[in-house]
Structure formats: structure tokens, C-alpha cells
Length: 258
Image (spheres, rainbow, N blue to C red):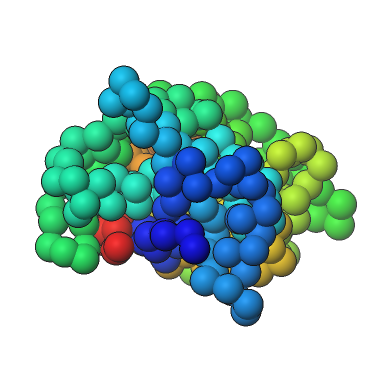
């Protein structure tokens, strides 16, 4: 029997399992336990290692058994569990994508509002070419895991003659990204507000295109918007349609449930 915790952040759900219980079967456990029709079901497993030094380290395995660098949502799920089980208000979590620090802003069990430091994004404006679609301008962004961010003007987030789900699936699984990539579709609503939708690489690996709900956001704080409004594509449009750096605010629906 393997004890586990299940949590979600923004609908992105994970199992949390203590590292010693994996017994080098990380990929096999991920495939078996994350299967939604025959097991617990989840987008991935965060294996939590508690080192003798007191440091904490996470290994993330997607539902298909592949290992990923990190997940911002998964990291916040673990922080929420540590807040509930150990009373931790601040926690540093090592990942293959680097150290991530989390702070509990608000706790109303089972809901936790977690602020996470995602590091400094590496942004590379780039136009990619897709078969049957053509050139798609956007930005490659990395904060420890890969993202491709593109801006749209349509209310349904469609672009280049395709729905956002279709285009996201094609970008996410393109050979251009050897290990897959998350894809964000961003629409500017006003000088202080944007909306976006997210296609995550692990969801497409499972063959399950899925919307992680649309959020409205007032600050480029999280990985889904990490091609932040000051940097990504700024060479083409100053602060994207005249957007200056907005005041800090929390995105709707960003709490973690355990």
C-alpha cells in the first residue's frame, strides 16, 4: 500500500508521494496511479524527498511516465500540503528546474493561496513554422520548464484558422520542442488586464486536450504569463498594446486544494 495526497492548483491535479516509497519505480507508478479510468487519476506525481539536511527536493513525473523539470502548479500543491501537514508558511523546494520558494498568503483548509517565486524568465521571441498552419509568431520562455506564448485577438482564443486547442496540440507536440512544451494563448483585455488559456504538454501526452480555466490576471507573476509584459516581444509592440507594468494582484482561481 502506498499512501499519497492528492491536490490541485487551477485544476491541474497531482499526487504527492514520499520519495522512498517509489523504490526506483517512479515512471511505472506515474503511469499506473495517474490513469483516470483505472486508478486514482492525476496529471502527474510529485515525489517528495526529505533530505537529512532538512532540504526538500521534488521529482515530477507526468502521467505517461516521462520526467519533467518542474511544474509551478505542482510545486504549489506540495507547498500547500506542507502547510497543512507541517504548518510551514514558507518553504524552499529543490527541483530539476532550480530552487523554488513558496509562501502561504492565505489558508482556509482545504484551500490554500500560495505565492511562488518562479525565478527570472529566459525569453526568446521566435516565429515557428507548423505544417498546414504556416508561421506562428510568439515567444519561447523558460523558467525551469518550457513555454511558448502567443498573443491572440479573438474572444474564443482561436488563431491562424484553428481553435486554440488544435493549435496548442500541434505546437505542444511539435518536433521543434524535443521534450514538449506548454503553450499559452494570451488576449489583452485592457491596459491593466489580460486573459489566457493554457495547453500543458503532459495533457497532450495523455491525448486529453483540456482547458485549465481562463484566468484574469493583473500582474506577470506566474509561469502561464511568464513571457511578461515588459519583456517578451517588446521589440515589436511596446509593452503589448501600451500595457505598462500593472500593480500586483492575485489571479482568480489560483488557490491550491488538498
